[in-house]
Image 1 (tube, rainbow, N blue to C red):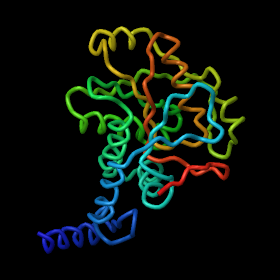
Image 2: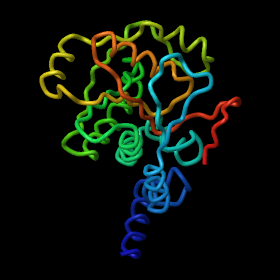
Image 3: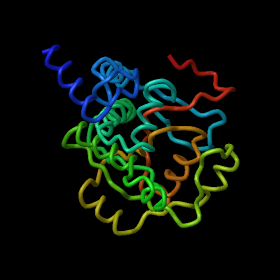
Image 4: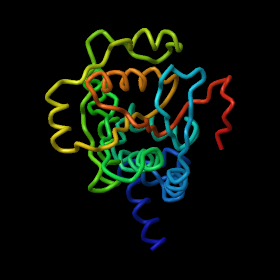
Length: 237
């Protein structure tokens, strides 16, 4: 089995020039060793609060710090279109959701991406990995693209906490048709907001506000990774 896997990885590297985003081993985009590490981390998701935390933010869960293999996974999938990483990212997100929410029906709501970003990247990474997470969690979990982003929101990269909050203020809406469909299909489901990375919490808080404004209570938020803040007392193990 191991020999066959090495041959497959060697062929992939020869034809596609692929390497593991975690350790740069030639072969598939995420080698078995790094994938095993990610699966272990998915089982150890825990609350990761930004410092300072936006007032009223629901508990945000992550599988670890935005560094190392987690950071490499997110960036390769989002910015370099390594689409094969959508499933392992979905596994990580599913681990965070499973820890965040109680047993029963779940609705996973991805944070919306700017239309220009989706067009430039050629895909919507957060939506894709959220759908993978819902499938991995089973029949009682559904991904619902409820949130819409108004025009005028700029890229968050490089903005501090105050600028992020101002940029996102009242930026998200939930169309009535989406609410009606959700109530019809999953009337008693727990709603969990999903994203790839938690930085200041401004994005998650705005998504929570928009959902709660139309009568959809939010149980928690789940992300793959959380950035370490200099004033953050948490120990990211």
